[in-house]
Amino acid sequence: TAGAITTFYCCTLLTALILQNVPGNPGRFTPVMIFGNSVAAVIHHGNALSSTTGFLLMTSYTFAVVLAGGVLLARRDA
Image 1 (cartoon, rainbow, N blue to C red):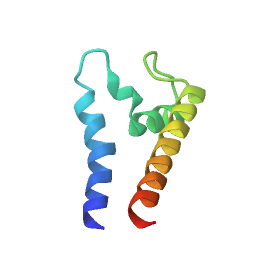
Image 2: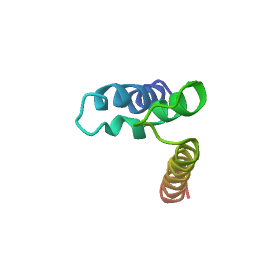
Image 3: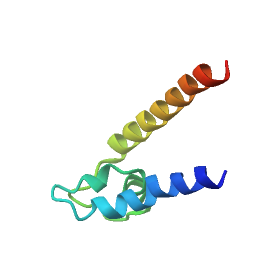
Image 4: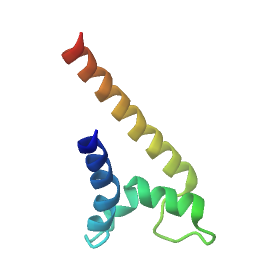
């Protein structure tokens, strides 16, 4: 459980921080930045994703993780 929590935080928080300094700003596609720019921002930033695009991207992230979990569950525990 501790390893899963650590992996989650590394994937969500640290990835966003590391990718902010990369040219082209790929950090804007991370879940933390999508949430921050679509929900918490009062003024829309020019390089941020729109709310609709952010929602669709977060939905696809969720679908990919659930699909990967289902495949691993069927492969290991069945």
